[in-house]
Image (cartoon, rainbow, N blue to C red):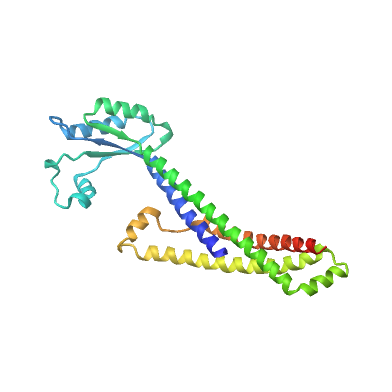
Length: 275
């Protein structure tokens, strides 16, 4: 159970950090698309767009994608050897933002639409919103799985405690008859199950940590292989990071604490029935 919980925490951390990086990248860059219009000089409109956008405060570097970069973007769909002069291909101008908070996106969109023939502005707000929703769904799903795993662990501890008490029923009854307090008996079981929970948590945490390290090494070593580059582009180095390892440590402590507390409650419940 500890291993499954640690794997869940690590997976949630990877997706959450990747989504955070995506959002930061999208927020710091906007694009202007210039569609071909009959009778309009595309090169002139591109130069006009660059000059216009650079006038806004908070804007950094502005550049148009070269013919080679545009062909590379279209190659997976249209193949190699494209002639951009014979195709109605929109041109893209990328705008890096030094201070996103200073940029008036509404005014930039209005100005581009009014002064640039075939121009349209995209601040990636749609993609940013979708990423935020996706990351939130993954986080909530991860918490739901974590709750289910912890619930299953608590039930396992309850059954294990009852089994242990059934196996030592005579000893428990004798201690109860000679006047041993419930807290004394409960502490003995609690100490036993605390050590079991701590051992189980450590084993599961170490196994999950080794798995995370192996995944990080494999993702770095397989760069250039089929599928590996896409995975790296989506999630970076597929590295759990410091937050993930801290989460693993927290799971180990949580497993030990829940095991001890659950066993104590189960013992008290059983002893109250004997009274």
